[in-house]
Image 1 (cartoon, chains in turn yellow, brown):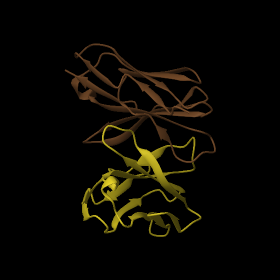
Image 2 (cartoon, rainbow over the protein chains, first blue to last red):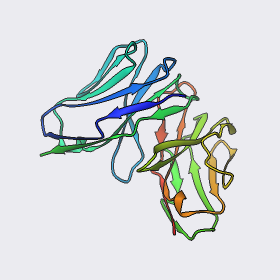
Image 3 (tube, each protein chain N blue to C red):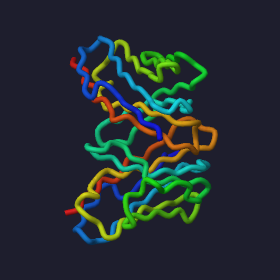
Length: 113
Length: 113
């Protein structure tokens, strides 16, 4: 089955700096890669996703890149702000909707003001 | 839309007691997922339903766990009897067939003493 590894487990950055979180997956059939942000006491919330037919996607300060050959994908947050502090999860699935999504272990991001 | 609604938010019970967690998915979403989150194991998929029918329950840890979805707007996850190692945050999520990603509820924090 699919296995998703995520690094680093903890990341601390200064406000205004960039943050990068990296993930690798094992199943070459996976073609959908969402990223979730989880704030304290809340459920994970989808923040951005990418499909296998796209190499990069950007939404304001966040961007995701995908390298299908190497089976890894990354989340980039620029101009970090204190409200970006949260746990971020990468995930991989075959398709969307009715397919199992396997999550990475999470990265706790601290943005210091 | 009010999102995915879970109840209760917190549950403290004694070992051996029956626990029932409840979930109301977003109207129109065809898929419903139950996840368990712990520090040690991260987010684990327990079971998921499509149009109220259980599709994959391979993540249900033991026979003590059971889940039902009697209609499109309601699902339950039951643990009987409960054990201290069942202590975790349990999330319900839903998604449409052609949607992207999941919408998670706020979770139920279960403590078994």
